[in-house]
Amino acid sequence: MILAITAVAAVLGIITILRSKPWRKHYVIENHVVFWVILLVFLGVFAVTAEYGPHEAYQRAFMFGSVAFSFFFATVFAKRPKVLILILTLLFFLNIPAQYGSDSFTLSTEPHLSGSEFLAIYAPNNITCFYDFSLHIRYSNPTKMISFVTLGTQPFTSVPNASAVAAVVRKADYMILSDTQNNYFYYYLQENPLSQENLNKARVLTDLDRVYDSLGFTILGKK
Image (cartoon, rainbow, N blue to C red; front, side, top):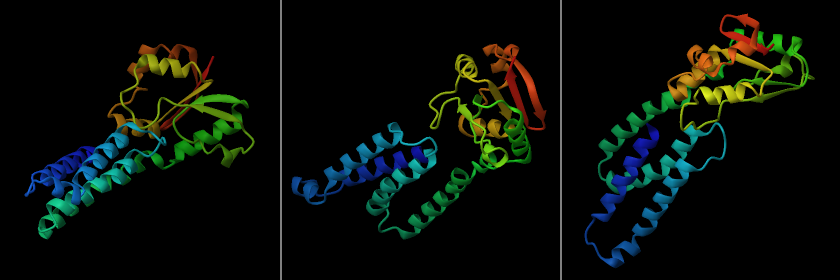
């Protein structure tokens, strides 16, 4: 949503400048219109295509959006302060779910911590675990060596299918299913690739035993 609003603001800002009068060569050059148009286009391409970190999706949208919005406000609403205040207020409220909606899966719940402690104490050393979050192993057993594999990284461009799930599960000795992970996938994908139906299609459950099971946190291990 933020990227879409940013794109609209950038396009409207560019159109407004290009339609300004008088439309003469010296006006374009002296007011740096060509420079701003090229800059916005390249920033937009970079913001959508480049990846420089696994958890920067919404920061990226706001960071590059600020350039387009600054340009848009300066050219379109400079003489309309009341409209500007209204739009900024609306953007402020859009910022709240974008910035804080991820709290539903970034907070470590009691089942998450209890399951992590069980794995840290009873699992063998030097294992591979399929999970998308930190298990805080160092809190329970700082010497435990566990490597992790995940089902893709942000920003997701598609929903991982059963084949992708099966390929990742085969790399791991243990697989974790949790409410935290479920919230994570629903937040970014609006569905959970690790649903019971998808796991059945991937045919991985027959190779896994239930090692640990509590409310909202399950550990599956290879037979």
